[in-house]
Length: 284
Image (tube, rainbow, N blue to C red; front, side, top):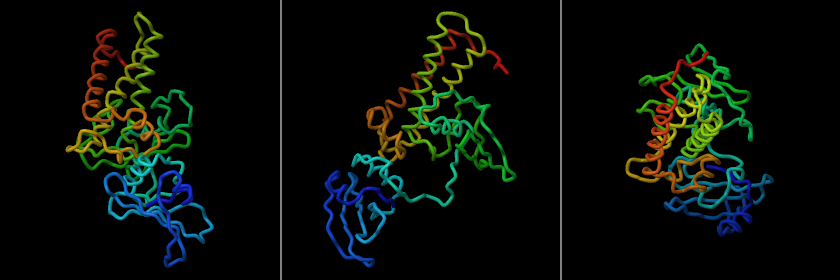
């Protein structure tokens, strides 16, 4: 399901795996078994004669490879940078969003590291082809949107999906809550700069759009929560950022905390409108 950049000796030192030399159809190998917290058995294999470095990882179940790999990295404290290859769920390697707002959110997450220059939706290059597939581009990041077969999603900033849609396939719960924290912080900075005065329509919408974007994020994170669980499983955090968010605040990703965060954001919007009034016409 994956290949790690680490050699067996490094894995043995860092994870406690016990590698032994064994015979295979291709020749002698270094091999070890491992077990995840849920009981999933993994095999770690290195063909001794292979000139290419690294250790292959196989699973002895039919679970989605991405889920198992996410759990392996989290439980061993290995990083995504130490994975040199991973199995893909499908042959199509394009990035597929459910809606335009989700494509916009993905682009915000994947721009150049350290780049916090605001990106307005109107700055995106948006094209629809003859198959009714949309592509949303900003510099080198391209996201595609398939034609919808289910109910239409109401338009508007921060409406990322329809209630009947599956969870996002491109932003994990940690990514959603990271974006929410960034939007919340930026709205706070803008409001602090405005101070106790009347704000114009452009200033109003600069904050209101951020609040609309962040209010839907906890609900998107909650979509990953199975109905029989109260805490998001590790397998839901498949990105480096997602796992970093989980390690940073593991108690933030349960039903109660995410529901409370959603209510807090709704209250923030109501308080903003109480102070600054209802939304004025959006400036052109």
